[in-house]
Length: 87
Image (cartoon, rainbow, N blue to C red; front, side, top):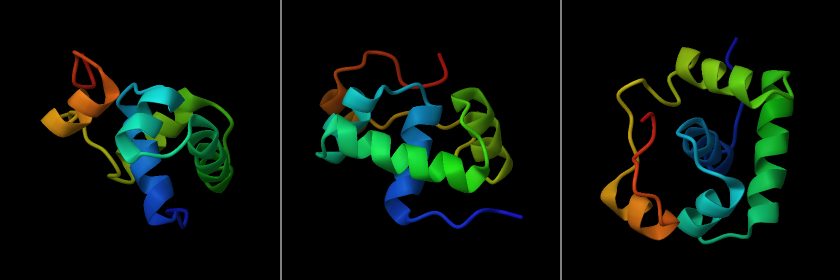
């Protein structure tokens, strides 16, 4: 059964699943890295895990992200990343 996540938790899980750090996700969402960490922690609790790798697998399973998902041009620019996710 898919856990209930807030829209913000869903955004953060997607970004973390694409390899963003808390700092990068915070820059994209214009929130502090500690706020990102709080949302991520609560989302991981909803998934019943404390492992980021398992969280990513569950994000794929519940279609929060896909293997073809990448950071948008805006997300790359805001985060400072050159790569766009799965690569």
